[in-house]
Length: 220
Image (cartoon, rainbow, N blue to C red; front, side):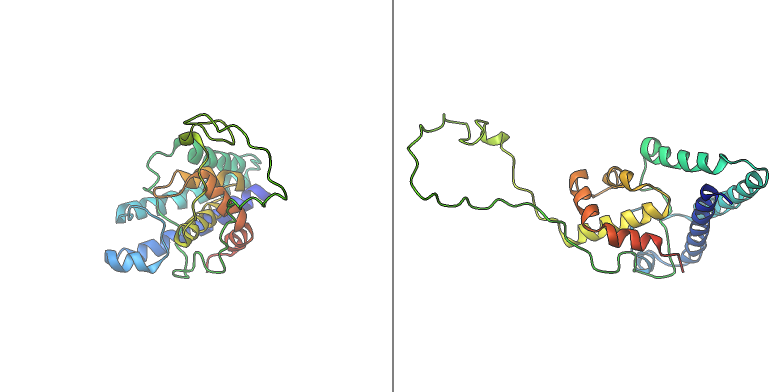
């Protein structure tokens, strides 16, 4: 089995295990469903969506095994490429998906989550001697850059722990689906109620070790 076929087969294993759990969750009411996993924001999948996903996954696995047996070396790589391009270019209703479910409820973001380091302004040191007086800046412009105050760069805001945990959970899920690390920030930024892509990139850098460790953990 080539590396690409192995990656796709492992991904299908995770998806099929997830769909099997969602089939069991269909019996739960909305309140119980909301608590059974640490879900990202999404529309709860209905029975026919879960069953459709189950049948399509079974068909995909049959095709994957048949192409591998026929010696088609590029089929699995094509599946991976199409999956990535669909997420980057074709997904419009991002909340309409079946989120990855695991057998460990509410542990999608376990471990220590690091808060990204945000640069803050520090007071300038007092000079040893008073410099010569300079002309006052023109009204409506800043002394440092000559730009209008409205154009001056504002200080970054603190990122709440809940937002950090959500982004970490998103990253773990996308890596589990076979996404590459450089694609995570733009993909997560497209989800509802997520911070700006720049802040997402900060969170990812600060928590990369945790995210990659969680993504490597097999579904129980």
